[in-house]
Image (cartoon, rainbow, N blue to C red; front, side, top):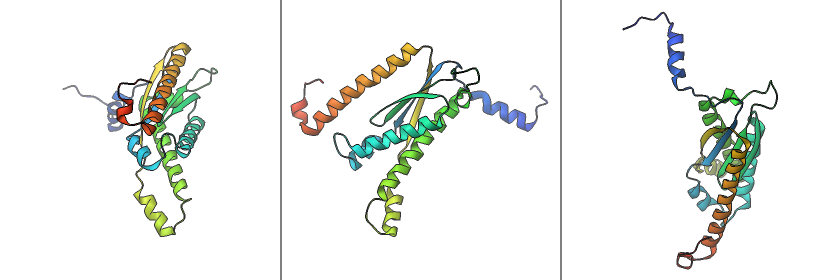
Length: 194
């Protein structure tokens, strides 16, 4: 066994950094967050096929993350999903969000979204006429929302546009399907496409 002259701190830092992957600098970084098990949250708490309160909450979450993530240039929201594009090449001194460290992107961005969404849910509960003790119990009983996250880099703007086009096409398909399922029976929809 090879002996090293590394201190405990140096050894532990080296071990911790073995999975500290970084996305390439000077590239487009795509970050998609998605509500974890949101179908139950939406089904039980919001109107079908579309709920203005939920849509407004997702828009507020999107704006909050955009405002607080360095290099965020664009975001697209549909249902419980938000996709952001980040850049670090505006100027020579522009920095990547956490140096494009994947672990930071995958943890901080969904944490921001989760915190903001839950804050908005609680704020909406405060509009409910009830006593303080009832309100406290309602807050303690809410199912907290959680977002998961994926992140990757793309080399060119055409791929960024293509990704957002794909999400828009999916949004249109999902909207038609959701509306149809709200107003028509399963039997009436059987064998139909969008």
